[in-house]
Length: 322
Length: 255
Ligand SMILES: Nc1ncnc2c1ncn2[C@@H]1O[C@H](COP(=O)(O)OP(=O)(O)OP(=O)(O)O)[C@@H](O)[C@H]1O
Ligand SMILES: [Mg+2]
Image (cartoon, rainbow over all chains, first blue to last red; front, side):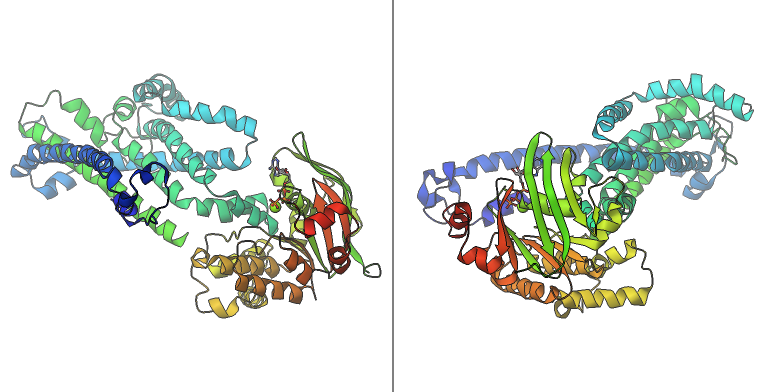
């Protein structure tokens, strides 16, 4: 804990009056007067953080205990790379490649929509928009972030999907493309608000230095402000994307639900979370299907961990480079 | 006196407002070419505001408005139609606090060249070296040009900012207390630099340090409460000031 090191390493000259600390002058050097209070504060923080770690550990353990038995009736390779997901057939097929590809494709395509629009909106809000405009737009975008996902899913189902069906003349509007649009809706506010905070925290002095050298406002944004905020923007993007990959309700409602590897934008898909959520209720307790759904959960979990590691390493790299 | 030397830029009844607050009152002040002019005065009297009017940096602060004129080469640069981007390339600025970009030392100095369309690598490299040498920083950084500029000491960062401003070869260099955060040795280096630079550049420097004003400037202007109180050759202003406020200030009786 850096806080402890800081307070211990702090040099307080003897006899100096540091407000309440100076009550017992002989104690100021060791800080014993406040040691008890600090100990209580530190240990309660420690306990709280330990609790969350323990809970996380328990969930992980549970996931593994319920998921790993899957591999007694299907090999890891057949599970991950199998094209067919027919868990209730006789004999059943437990291949989740179509579900994985569903998750990956919907996450990628929604990011293709959400990242540019989210980051660009953030740039507009913090660098270009007149203050009055930003005052109106910002709360609107934050409100969008607080929309329950079921509302977004519902909107996608009754409004966007029929529209897609008509525009592109396709059999169903419930497909990869519609799901990506709706997920993009969900991640744009996350990406936008966090990126905007990152941009706003770039010191004004950088912008002034750039303008004073004869850079245009656009050059200042692209060469100074955005690079200086890059670690925050990267974090924003990855948080937005992980919101998309783990999102269940929206994809359950608008993705179409077919466990096939998508070959086109307008194929229906069945991402991992949708599959788990819709099938868990019917899967016999501790049956093969039940275990296979938990194993799918482990796979999804590995994906989100991968995302977070990427996020951390990316933001660290950009910070080093500056 | 300075009358036989050409004036490069001058203000005419320049007033500046931050919202309703008037920070500058009708300032008319000429600046001689290839001379150093020092602006002195107590804190909050409007020195920075004045300096920032000369390259339209105040545009970046919302709610500012100016009246009067700033004449540079016969045109009033406060007019709307003026291209502030090229104006700022010709009138460079060094800020009170060192503000290098979070980029490498090299990229900091090259920045102004790149945004002004100089792409040729060898020209850029030569200019970077030349500017760093002018700013008396080259020897200290020549082996770490591609290291982050934020790893430099405060004094080195300030000289880097000077090098960065010099790289685009402005005609006028505005310096807002460039040595206020520096130790005596770094301060001395910057003062030597100013004396050297005035061979080629017109320099307008804000300073709180009377000795510094006396050492580096040809002309000194004393500001008080948003007004120009007195301007004259540095020697005359410090030895026999005309106004009482000037005398009180330079003898340290207020401020
Ligand atoms: N952005 C701003 N908004 C409102 N008022 C401002 C702003 N900047 C400066 N002022 C006011 O304008 C006056 C002049 O400020 P300025 O920064 O020009 O003073 P200064 O002479 O440079 O002072 P110092 O020596 O402390 O740097 C001050 O009263 C200040 O409060
Ligand atoms: Mg100032």
